[in-house]
Every structure is written in structure tokens, then in C-alpha cells.
Length: 193
Image 1 (cartoon, rainbow, N blue to C red):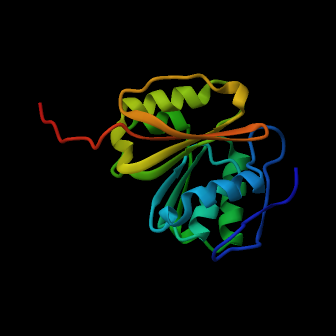
Image 2 (image 1 turned 135 degrees about the vertical axis):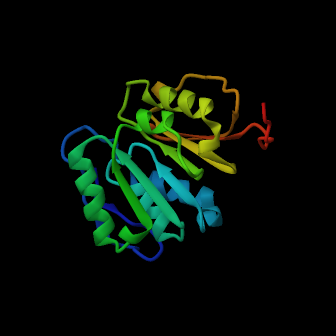
């Protein structure tokens, strides 16, 4: 595993701390660069939910490139501290909220705002990405109408699922990393019962 760093933007070149042990799945610079090349200017002024924060690398990269705000969820205390230290090192703390919380509890609780990008990169081989997607599918207001969900997993973990509110619109493989992109099936209409 090479050095983790911010690739572009206001915090370009700053090295990020990693979380000791195997509790997180750090994104490689190659995958991160590819991901942000795909997103391009779509990252400007968006609100991001980094569901399994880890080192915070994805949310921090987005903030460095002009995202408005990022919420990081992490259940591991060590990882929470690493995210906070990385935010301090990149001078992006003022645009971020770091929650020491279970991602699944967060997804089932009512949230006051929706996010433009939900990034799901859970610990490997625990089917956690599927559980997260199902919970978001039950609470589709978490994602803004033009937002997207990106799942980062090992290709071996992929299972073709169907969702009520979301469609897959892209899939990219980089070695042992698979990025799967979802969007809302159609703009949700305000239906009152």
C-alpha cells in the first residue's frame, strides 16, 4: 500500500494518515484519480455522505476539489480520529462532520437533508454494501434527485441486485476494485397519502 495523498484541489499533495490494521479498505490513488476524473466538475458544491469513512480519503478529495460539505460515518474510534487528523492536516474541517456512528443506524434514522453523492466502501466480504443499498432504497430521500450512489467493492463481492428507486448506470473495474454507479430511477414525485 503506497502513501495516501490528496491528488488535486486546495489540499493537493498533502499526505493522509491511514488506519492501522485491516478494519478499513483504503482506496488506491489510481482508483481515486479515476473516480474523480469520472465525476469531473460534478463534484463542485455537492454534499457528500462517506458512509464507511475509513481514512476519509474520498470525502477529503471531494472537499479539496470544491465539494460544499462532507459527512463521514465511521464506527471504529481509531478511524474517526484518523479522519479528524486528516481533515485538520488538509484544512477542511470546517466543511466536514465526522460522526462516530453505525452506518446502518444512520441510514434508518430520519435525516434533515439529502446528499448529492453517497459513497459506500465498507470492510470487505461482509455483504455490507448490499445491506446499505437496501436501506437507502427504503429511504430514497437520502439521495437528492440528481445525485448518485457509488459502491466501491472487490469484484468478487458483486451481486446483481434490483432496487425499487435506483438503477445502475455505470461500472468500472480497476484490478481488485470495482466501482458501481447508481442513480435514481426517475425524479421522485411528491406523493402525499
